[in-house]
Amino acid sequence: MASTSLNVGLIGLGTVGSQVAERLVTGQPQLTRRAGLELCLQKILVRDVDKPRAVKVQPGLLTNDPDLLLDDKDIQVIVEVAGGDEPMHTYLERAIRAGKHVVTANKVVMANHGMPLLTLAAEKNVDVYFEAAVGGGIPLISTFRTDLQANRIERLSAVINGTTNYVLGRMGSDGLSLEDAVKEAQAAGYAEADPTDDVEGFDATYKLAILGSIAYEISVKPGDIYREGINGIEPVDFRYARELGYAIKLVAHTQRHRGRVEARVHPSLVPLDHPLAQVEGADNAVFVEG
Image 1 (cartoon, one colour):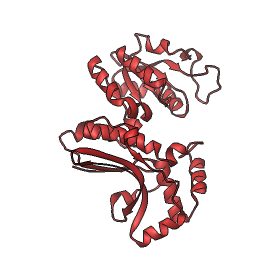
Image 2: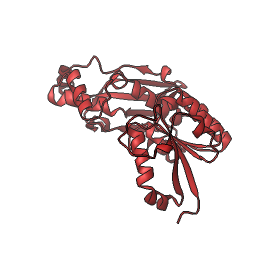
Image 3: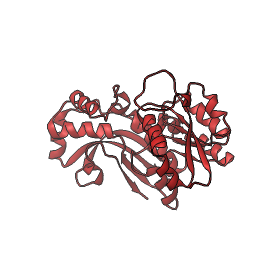
Image 4: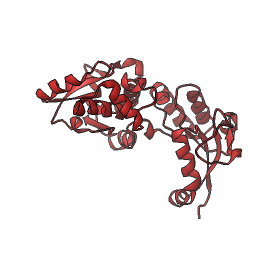
């Protein structure tokens, strides 16, 4: 039996939010047993409370008033999975100032405002968890913040956008055009209806800003990073690359250089014997040198 309770406010009830809500409701006995706390979903912030939804939640949990979550002293944790910069940045800042812990998958907010939010959280003695913002199921954030704390990171190269890795893989293996490979990725659930963030490298840039800020303990903003998407890649490029002993990957890369940190995202020729060349499908991988 849990000795006390932990009250959760959820922001967002889309694809990810629905899964989170369902897990908190249907999986409560297991989660309570593992955590030693009774996890209680108190409120869910949505844009439209009357919208039909795939997940079944009590209607009384839904609200379109952020104050009912952010000003509720009984809610101790805010879980944000709505995405986008504003108003989510403001909501998370308010939550931290109110002494609430935060769990977020929002790469845009953490890329643009991560360092100030983490500084504020330290001042307020609360935690901000954002593991889901980078790397899918790979525990990258915790690895950099704990396991690699004693290391001086010199270089970081990563395949951190699963959609483009899948698209490039299909273009290379079966000669699909970029357009057809993107459509296939959308049908498989890897790409959004609007694939711009993936194809043009914005998604990888947000993620690299987060990783770079943690790895080098500086503020790396998305606008500081050179960005080039995969729009210019054609199926014939893969044949020439293989003949030369390379794979084509969208690589996010940082390195120390002359007292500064360089950061860039662009299609790269990766030697076939390099670990990043072996990353298949929608998988992610990070190669660190220190």
